[in-house]
Length: 109
Image 1 (cartoon, rainbow, N blue to C red):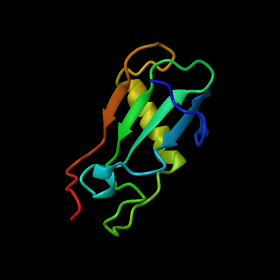
Image 2 (cartoon, rainbow, N blue to C red):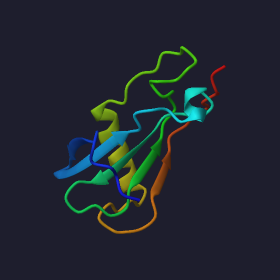
Image 3 (cartoon, helix red, strand yellow):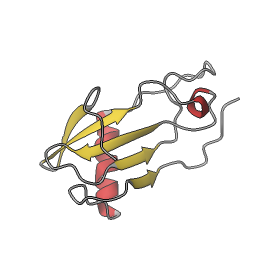
Image 4 (cartoon, one colour):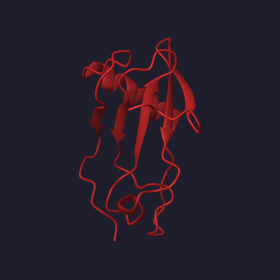
């Protein structure tokens, strides 16, 4: 799974540059508040395995009129470090590495 470059932001963590991206439009399940926000991260120079992060927050364009906070670069950097510690090897090709950060999230509505 390749990360689309359009709309991706760059971040450097521990000397390695990555690209990360939040889906611009919420999926139906994210829009209704039943699924949380997800975003993807890939190494910028030598992309291999994509990191897919499931957060515990709502997508910013949800339809529930619930306030959603943005994903901050500091959170992305911490998530990259966590994924690396859990075995994510971004330069190695393979299936997406899934990192679920939900802790007691209840659906909106």
